[in-house]
Structures are given as C-alpha cells and as structure tokens.
Image (cartoon, rainbow, N blue to C red; front, top):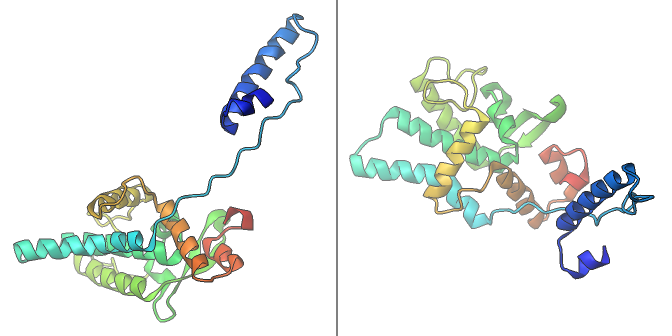
Length: 233
C-alpha cells in the first residue's frame, strides 16, 4: 500500500490492484501454494466523493435564453414561424426555467400536470423518489414561461391546456419523456455555445449551489431537492 501511494496511484487504481492481488492469492491459498492470503484483511484507500460540476449564473442565463432567441431569429428571417415551432421553443424555454427554478429531476417535471401548478402562489407539488411529495417554488420567469406554453398548447391540441394534461408535449401531442428532455437540452447547449455534455442533473446542482451562494441555509435546500440526507445535498 505504501508503495502504491509512493507511485502516485489514484485511490481507485490502488483499489483495483488490491482487488486483483486479493483474488490471485485467494486462488493460491485454495491450491495450497501459500498458507494464507496476506491481502485478505487489507482494505484499500477510501475514494473521495466527487462533487458535481455546476454551471455559472451566466451559463444558466445563456441556456434559458437560447430557445426564444432562436425563435425570434427565425421570425426575423422568415417573417413568421409555424405554431408548432413556436410551441417547441416555448416548451423548451419553460422546461429549462422550471428545472432551474425548482431544482427538480427531469423525471419529476416530465410527470407534472397543469393541475399541479399553482400560478397564484408560484408553487407546484412534485412527487419525487419513494412517491414522496414536496412543495417547489416557481419563480416569476418560470410562471410566465409556463403560462405562455399553456396558452400555445391549447391552440394546437384540444384539451392540452386542461388540468389533467401533461405540461410538456412532443410534436404529436403526447407527453415528453425524460430522454427527450435530455436530447432537447443537448441541442440548446450547442446553440448557446455551451458544452453539450452538461446534464439536467448539473442544472439541478447549479440551482442548489446558486441558492447556497446567495445565503440559503443547507436544510432548506435539502428539502427543495427532495434529499432525505444532508450528505446527499
């Protein structure tokens, strides 16, 4: 172990090497080539917990603005846009605003219905892991984005603005899946000149980090994220 450390190996590399040696000597012991396995009780170094990377405020702003900026650019070039194209831009803008405003998982916002949104209170009820419900706050930009989306959805599909209808729809009027949300995010990250490998989960952690940087207490942020343990936050 000391030799591994002096060689400058990472803890993960040391643990892999140790596992191989332990397995090899277990075989030697079973074949009675060696009397005991010297690595049997030896534990590898603890792996440090990697903190998730987060986006800066300017990067988040660029992502939030990308769908509507592209819509206006298309309108300026062609003089008009199709109702479907307008819906898609409004939908993606609302998705990003909702993700960043609430800190929700993409599976949680994909499951939201219009009846879950309380526009008068600026809140929504979200069902998280273990079917546990929590109250999430929707900021002004998220509420406005959702109101514009609901109005456009009602123009395109009958009943799409009803309380029992999903918030986010695909081109056929069906509920948008979490996988589709991930694909749309990659598209708009590229449009905003941001790394396309940024994930919705990083946007969730950016929400938490920016709140903590602004002075929010850790316990409140834990509850907003739906974490049962502070160590997860």
